[in-house]
Structure formats: C-alpha cells, structure tokens
Length: 581
Ligand code: ADP
Ligand code: MG
Image (cartoon, rainbow, N blue to C red; front, side):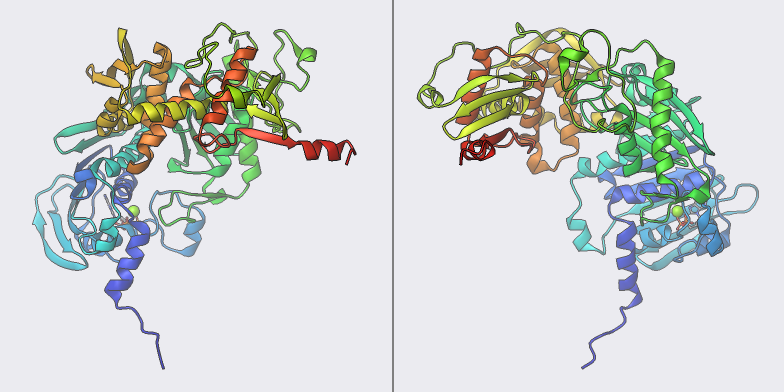
C-alpha cells in the first residue's frame, strides 16, 4: 500500500517557517537584520505582549520598489546574493531569502515601504500565506513591517511561548547586541507604553557600553585591538583581576554579526586563565573581522553560529590580543594559579602564565597572592563552638586538616575523604536558606547607606519581572531615575557589599531560568555568594563544624549547582594500594 503523499504547500511552508521563526525574538532579529542590510541609521522596535501580540520594526533604510515589495515574500527571494559563489563571501546579515516568507506564513503582516522621492510608497497586507491588500501609501523613505498575532495559525507553537517578560528578555538582549555592534545607529525599543531601550547614536563602542551598562562596567574593561594575518580582533574585555560573577556578559561578533561561538568563548577563557579570582568570568565585547571567504555563516537557520576556515589561528589571535592588551594596560597584579608546591613560589612574584603551555589547563585552584583572607573573617552561619545532637556521629568522623587552603581532609571508619570547603558550605547554607524560605521568615536588614547600582536594560527587565520573588527573599530595590537603583533592604545574611554582588548575580541568574526553577536558583545563588571561598584558611573548629553540618544535610554528595562535594579513598583502596591485601 502506498503511504507517502507530498505535503500540501501550506503545510510545508509552516514547517520551514518554524525553523527560522521560533519565537518573537526570531522575528525581531530577522526584521532588524533586514533594516541594517538596508543601511538604516535609525531603527524603532515596538512590542505588545512581549512581541506575541504585535511587533513593529521601522527603519529609514533604502526601502523597496513596488515589484520588490511584492517579491520579497517569495521563499528564496533575496537581493543579497545571486549565485552559489556568492555564498562563499557573504557581506550582508541576510542572504537566505526566507525570513519574510516565514514570518508571513505564521502571522498577520503589514508591510509599508518606500524608496523616497516622487514614487508612491507600497502597502501590502498578508494573512498566513494569503495576500489580503496591496495599495499605494504615503510613506517616507524606509520600511516598516508590522507582525500581529504571531503563530495564530500554529497553535502548537503558540503553546510553548513564555509569558510576556520571558519573551521580552531575549529581545532586549538581542537588541543590546545590535546596539553594541552599531554604535552609530539610533535604536529604540518600546514595550507597550514603556521605553525599554533608548540609544541615540554615539561615537564608538566604549560610549555604547557606557550607555547600556554604566560607568562601572566601562572602568572594569581594557581595550583590545590586535590583528594577525588579515584577521582583526577589537573591542573591550575585563581588566584583570576584575571579572564578573557569571558568563552573561560575553558578547562575540563576527563581521558585525552577533554569534554564539565555542572557539571564541573557550579562547577567551583560556586567555584569562590564572588572571581572575576564582568563580569570576571575563566580561567581553569582542568584534572579530575575518575575510568573508574565511568564515561560513550558513551553518544555522537563524544564522547565530558560524564556522571558521582557520579556527586554530582564530584561537591564537584571541590569546595574543588579550595578552597584548594586558601588557598595555600594565601595572596589574595578576592572580596566579597556586603552584603545586607553594613554598617554592612565595612572596610577590606572580607565576608567569604562558598561553597554551602544558600544565596551564591543570585546573589548580586560583588564589589571590595577597593575604586577603584572614581567619578572623567570620563565616556566616558558622557559630563557633556550637554543639548539637549530631555530636555522637561526628565523633566517628575526624578532621585531619586543610589542604591547599581549599579542601578539608577528614577520616571516618570507611576511609579518607577530601571535602571541597566551598561546595560543602554552599550545600549547608542552601538547606538553611530553603528552611528559612519555607517558613517565610527572612530576616531583613535595612541598608544604612543606600547601596546604589546601575542596571543594563535586560537586568531591568529581570528586576521588574521578578520583584515579587526577590521581595519574598528579603531584597527590595527602588528605581532612582535612569538606569540607577538603590538596594534598600536585603536578607540579613549578607555583608553590605556581598548583598549587592549577590543581588546582581541573582538578576542575571533568574532571568535565564524557567519560572519553576527560579526559587531554587535564587537560593543556590545566595548560598554560593555567602559560602566561604576556596583559598581561605580555616580554623579547626570551623572545619569540624562544617563537616558535621554537611553530613546532616539530606544531600552531602553534591552542591546545589550539581558539583561534587566529597571525594573518598576507601580503607579497602588504601590497603590495596599499600599491598596489605
Ligand atoms: P534576506 O534578508 O535573506 O534577503 P528576507 O526574506 O529577509 O531575505 O528579505 C527578502 C528581501 O526583501 C531582501 O533581500 C531585501 O531585498 C528586501 N527587504 C526586506 N526587508 C527590507 C527592508 N527593511 N528594507 C529594504 N529591503 C528589504
Ligand atoms: Mg533577511
């Protein structure tokens, strides 16, 4: 029996559309790319309902003729490439000729466009794949595309969309990227009555970073500019030893196109290895300019990934560029990877880091060479001399000491164990915080001096969307005008500077997590920020207390972020190794 039938074109069309258009941000991205390709100096984006109800993208680019406006909805209709060879050297953001066709297939769309001058502008309306109106319209030079009711005819897709702020937040992120890549562009984003992003043109990247992220961000960066063999890396990256508590501020662009790229990301990490404090990541705004025939941008339907012809030289370029910048920035005391034998390398001499040298990837704990951590620094929630019901079982377990200021070495009847002090403390605090949270009894502290900070547009969205959640956990922040906020209240487990750091980390963390996971992410982040760090010497009492508390928790094996806490060497293994068995 024959089973195969050719899909009706409308169905095939919708399937293809689904690959390019996944959610509102995909529409915004395609329309904004078209505007940029049309040479726009100004782009306005207006949204309703996180883009689910309405997306308008208006530009002042070169516009389209009547014929082009009719043709642009055809699949594989493009003005950007003409022949297969052109795929080898793409200089525009678009080239696949399927964005408008795809968007039109899954929405109600209105296009207005004009080339300016005396010719009349064109208005076209489409619904799904039907043309519903076409007429003359008075319109200034440029193009406006309005997309209503995205996925109205694709209920399966509609169901998977997030709430308004969940859809808004990737759009803000994407447009922040565009703003960075095109400093001279005037870019505005409005969500309903609110202006979320307002970026007048500026002279360069530095001013743009300032506009988006504030003064503190700019001051923590150093300029990067380095070229090798026709390839150039420019931009800004963390000035060591500053860094960020997470990786959310790493922006990569290849020939002006924002991309996610493993090669650039891992080269960046490698370049900073040994330069930042533990649990800190480099922040970076990096623009790579490669000859168009040395990069393939056609590897992903949404064009967000690229492939390099000579990826190892790209990797090297990043390493060298960061090194050069650091030498230029000068006067910085690096945080060195602790050598295996610390007695050989004491004092002020930082350990020289040689990129790519063997042993540089050995994952030794980083530590600050200055004696920054003192034993007198009180561990939050570690009450000295506390006794409890767990004393009996604790007597079976004995702490021998601390290794590399990071690991607690202990024994019990089963053998030896090495406990990661940071991960262990994180687990202990997480359980306590979860308990406090269940009882909804966060002790709150009022800031005596207002803790001021600035937020990027996407952090602002995260703050507004999660006000309730944050307040439940004892954080209250009020807007102070512009991008400035003041942290007025915070949970009474933090020192003031810690509170601010934790709060900012929380905003980034919960922005990127699903609604159901936000609470536990929040508690995990709070635990991580208050836990003792690796590289901190501990008194015996503190170690004993920590180990005892750890084994009282329901899950002493892994920390709230899923990293292991304890490694064991059993008595059996010891005896086998020593040939006693
Ligand atoms: P692509 O961008 O891959 O060429 P699209 O479907 O996004 O494919 O657009 C099809 C064509 O419509 C483009 O090649 C361009 O000629 C034209 N076009 C689309 N948007 C605009 C715009 N904002 N301004 C001018 N021309 C546009
Ligand atoms: Mg396009």
